[in-house]
Image (cartoon, rainbow, N blue to C red; front, side):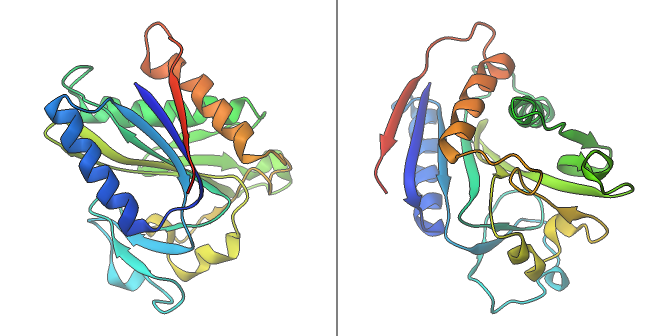
Length: 223
């Protein structure tokens, strides 16, 4: 199991190509399972269920077909993207259980910053009840999930809003849900650095995905 962190922003096509190569390597047994932490430049991605009408300002940022499940989402600086490439045949060949694990991973990561992340029936992602932050009756999305599985090897993954420009979400209907907003750790008063978020993600990982948390290799790639 390898952890990889890329500094700077990674162009989306480059990330897709790298994920494809890793998925092929994991299936062939020549590459380790990998969690890749990175940021993208401002862009929108369309999942396989994206509705054209949910792209409100198509000329605002580049738009990419992601090939993952889900609808439109935004990626940009200040958002931690975690691409998760696991061999489910070696673990639990259950896609629903895998997605549930990603949800729990995010919830436990947020808890380390005293933020209560929650699931919502019929809504993908992790949500925050605004009542705890002076916004009763509001629910905001703080993390998105969109995955793809090829030959039981997973790719794509999750994105957690640390301190992105939240106004950039206005160019889309995020994940097809217009009646709720988006938020971030910084918007909730948790002014944490990206490396602190990375440490929390890594610490929470073992609780969810490894029966006995073992020290994981951590590689930092300049980008």
